[in-house]
Image 1 (tube, rainbow, N blue to C red):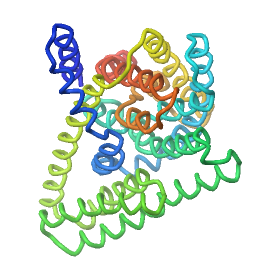
Image 2 (spheres, helix red, strand yellow; image 1 turned 180 degrees about the vertical axis):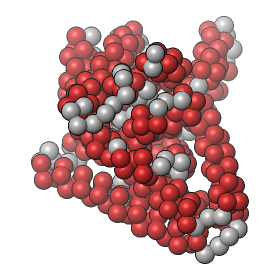
Image 3 (cartoon, rainbow, N blue to C red; image 1 turned 60 degrees about the vertical axis):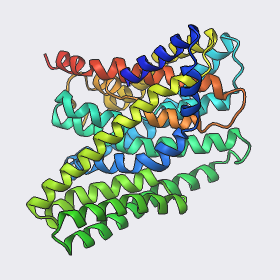
Image 4 (cartoon, rainbow, N blue to C red; image 1 turned 90 degrees about the vertical axis):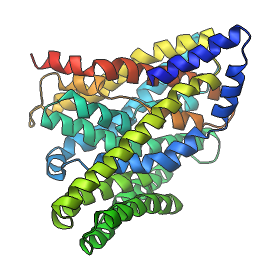
Length: 377
């Protein structure tokens, strides 16, 4: 991502000296539907690859912590960030309606499982803390997308703000996603158990992920949650009972390669999105202010539940700090911001989102290992 950002800036600078490379590159980037490519393409494979290696027993032990952070934490963060940013934008004379500020809160509150899982491979966090971070990131993006869709529907006038409507949407999306994911996982397990050929089993998992994600979207249930649940099922029950040692090793290598390739493409695209954004002094100041706002909201919404749960659960030292700094934002936030329909709110929210995501990946992502090492001293 850093390299693609530098490349994008070089194109901009070359444009200042009369070279037309920037215009050509911008046309190429504008031709890529980032929202479609990530949310309806790469995301299913990345989520499955991440969930495949999460231990279900470890996840079960931390279910109350993960469940609280992935639901209550995301909703509280949405309203804190949205409210604070509304007043910040008013102060900067950027006119964005309060409901769109809440939309921004919803798209920036969930931690990105793609970025988080990538970092967890190298930081060496304690197992219980790693499970909390990984589990929360895998589930809170599904919750965050539901909250985003509810608020965006209200903002665009397509939905009414009624408690019944919101509860119904949450129930259908989240519970439907879990149920569908279990069925998908069981189907995959049944098929994998019937063969002992790693090429065929790799194709089965590919079909399961791509077809299952598309069908979940068709049913209007949470496709991300469905794929995470299916990945957990295959990665635990399927791994133990339906695969030989050779298949297990080859399948792990196969999905790790897909994970690495798609991660590289995703973060390259995030860096190149710089070319199509509208940067003004006001927007950039708002983006810089949003960074501490998002971090403080995250700390409050993570630290408060941990404070109360310490009475009956054990947490690692500085758990709230590590969960805050290790809660990276990434491509999902950018993709959701790009899905906001054209209007006065779209450009400022896009630039603000981009500032937060770039800081999150480059600064938090490159220093989280040091933060973790410091907390363990």
